[in-house]
Length: 260
Image 1 (cartoon, rainbow, N blue to C red):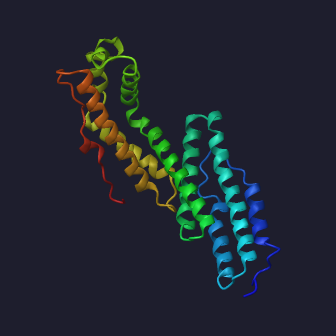
Image 2 (image 1 turned 120 degrees about the horizontal axis):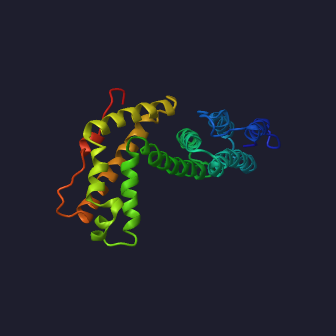
Image 3 (image 1 turned 60 degrees about the vertical axis):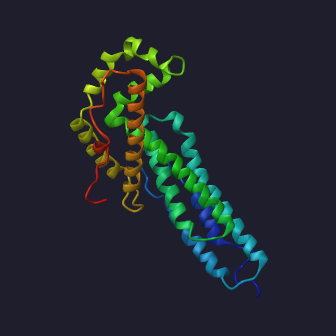
């Protein structure tokens, strides 16, 4: 069957490429789903419909080339944001993680319905980018309710790179009294209140369109539980027979909210 589209001209492709080139996005404020990411699926859907009954190899090659060109431009936007992180303050970096997560997830969820091998490559890349920045976002956001506690145990982790377990408690900054003092700042009620406020913050960070809030919250809880067990392990190893325990439990970390 002959090609059913103009194989030498892709005005829609040109428009998309221009739109991608014209994108000016920074992490200074959250931007939600960028229009160029939002329209990519529509472009692919349109082209696939046009090729549905075509056996033209030339048409398929031209369309796949267009997919690559536009997708490369889209991912360059995300990579540009990543490269800018070194010059940003912590709030702006957090905004950058959010923008990359939302747009990476949008690309993956919308484009993965197409099984074209060219597109599969990009959806896998989008998923990897999304997963990477979800992890970075979670590790950053949990500093807000548990910052001093995390910092204390991170300090112990650094010590353990050069010291034996039993030597940690002899360091003034990490002896039993220092441990008890830091743990006293994080009783159950304080931790739960901090996590409730954190949940509200996450709700504000992400648009409802992608529905990422529950996913991010599960990531936060999983990270916190991992850290909790690590804290317990460190206390057991470095402060044996001290009877020192954390002031909260894993049940305090698993908070459910009505709208999830």
